[in-house]
Length: 159
Image 1: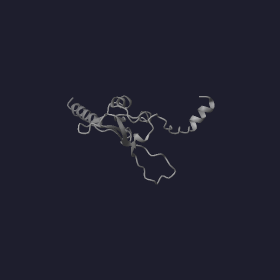
Image 2: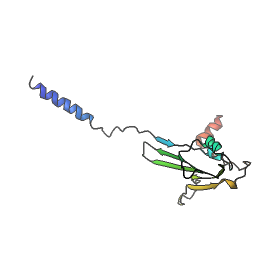
Image 3: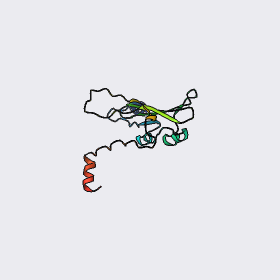
Image 4: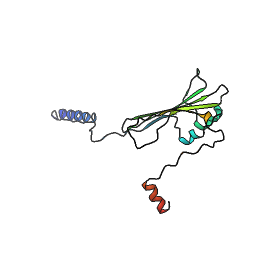
């Protein structure tokens, strides 16, 4: 009986100490964390010069940042932290209004088009003056991406 108490205490202590460390063979799952406004190319392409603040809010959603000192500027910020790699992606998009509350220009991060030359520096920040776009919306649409291998295979089958 006297000999069994130290053995029980050692077993309990050993069991509890085994729970304090996680073997590196098993790694925990970390989720992707999204924060802010998700803006798609379709949403941004609907913007035209002369839109009111209410119309822009309907298209893009409520801005994350509205500065009381710069009431003519709205900022949309998006942040994505990938759980598996810890990589952080940040996108910023701003809309600018005139004194009447009409949209005049937009600025933000734009991914440069992929080219064959990978040594060229990639610039994501770009400002677009909406006054140079025609008001009737006759701007040509961007080219449709070419289908990949599986897209072509499914198309040949009839899907």
